[in-house]
Length: 546
Image 1 (cartoon, helix red, strand yellow):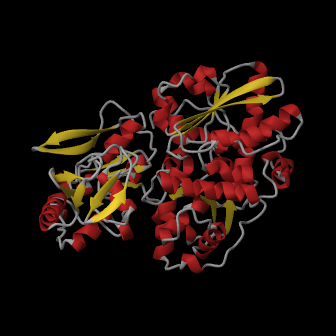
Image 2 (cartoon, helix red, strand yellow; image 1 turned 90 degrees about the horizontal axis):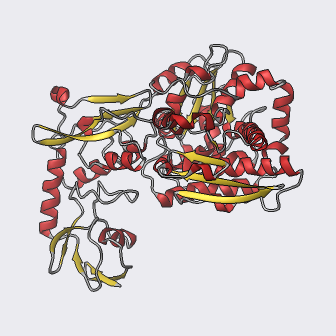
Image 3 (cartoon, helix red, strand yellow; image 1 turned 90 degrees about the vertical axis):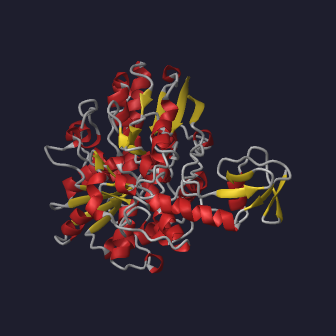
C-alpha cells in the first residue's frame, strides 16, 4: 500500500502503524511511551498526527490504510503536544544526571524542544514514594509518567508483579501485594522516563578501587553492547577497549567470564549426560539466569529438581579468582540486574566467602567511564589477563539466547559419541523466536531440546516432551538483559547477538572441552570432585523469599 505523509508518498504493508512507517522513512514523531516489544499503550499522546477525514489520531496505534493522507507537524498538533508534555511534567521531578537515560533522555530532549520548564518538587518528595525491589531494582515514582509500559512488560514476562493503583483521582504504578519480583529488570529497559533503575554499586566499587586490589570480570554479552554507551553502532565488538577502560579505572586484573562459561559447559554437559543415562529428573533446565531460578523457586517449585546444579559462569570464575589471587575484591560487569541478587545468595558462598563482591551493569560501567573522562572510542585495545583470559567460541555465545544450549550440545555430542559434530553451528536454537525446538541424534538417542527466549514463554510449555531446556528471562538472552544500554529492541538485540556469533566463528577453538586453558584450570585448581563441587555446583530452592 501507499500512504502520504507531509505531502510525500511512502510504501507500507497492511498491519503496520503510521508511526513505524514515519520513523522508517526518517520522519520524527515523538513517541515516548511506544516500545516495539509491547502493544501500544496510547498513554503519552505525544505521537498525535492529523489524518485527512479522521482528525487527530495517535500514530502508535493507528494502522495504515491505502491512500491515507497524514500531517505530522501542524500548528494544532504542536500545541497539543506541548500541552501533553506539560501534563506529563506537571508532577515530574527533574531527572538527575545519573538516571538510566542521563545523556540521551527522550523526555528532557522534548522538554527543551517545546520550551517546557521542569520544576523540582523536592519539598513534595513524600508524595512520590521510592520502592526498592530486593538488591536489584529501584522505582522512583516521582519520575513515573504512568505510561504503563513496566506493567505491560511485567505481565508479558509472566510475573505480573507491578500493578496500577488509583490515588487522589490519578493512577500510579505500585508493586503488587500478591506477587514477588524476579529482578529481571525489563521494567528498567522499557521505562521511557528513567523511573526504574538498578540499585547502584558505583560508590562501593569506587571505594574498593582505592585499595588497589579490585579484579574485574566481564560477561560475554558486554563486549557487543558497551560501545552503545559511547554512541558506537549497535553490536560493535569492543572487547579490547573494554579491558583497557577497566584498567584505566584502576583494575588490578581483568578476566573474561566467557572462560568460565566453558567450565559451565563442561560441568553442565556432564550432568546432562548423567541424567540421560539414568533417565532421571528430565528435562534438565539451565540455571545460568538468576531471574529464571528465582521464578522457579517462587512460582514453580516443582521444577527445582530439574534445575542443573551448575553455578553461573561469573560465580564459578569468582570462586577461582578468590582461590588464586591474594585477597581480591571481585567485581562482575554484567548485562543483568538480577546478578546483583544472585551474589547475595547464601548457598553460593564458598567456605563462608562470597565468590563475587559487587556487580555493575553495563550502564553503570558506562557512567563510571564517562565520570572519569575516559575517551572510550580512542582507547588502545588490551587483552584480558591470564590464566582466566582465553575463551573458546562456545563460551562467547553464552550472551545470546540459545547460546548455553548450543555450547553444551557441541560438547555433549563429542563426549557421548567420541566423534566430531559435523556442523557445530546449531542454528535451530538461535534467533529471537519465543520458543525454539530441536531434535538432535546423539549416538543411539534422539535428544529433544527447547530454548525459552523471554520468561513469559515458559507458560503453557509441555516441558515433559524435552530432555534439556534453556531458559533466559530477558528477551534475546543476556544481550537483552535488564542492565544493558537503553534503548533496546529486536533490531538491536539481533545486532548484539550477531557480533557474538562472528567472534565464535573466528575463534580457533570453538568447543569448550578442547580449551587448553580450561584443561589447565582443572589440572591446577579443580583437582578433584570435592573442589569441583565446591566451586562449580550448588543446590537451589532455599532462597525464594529473599
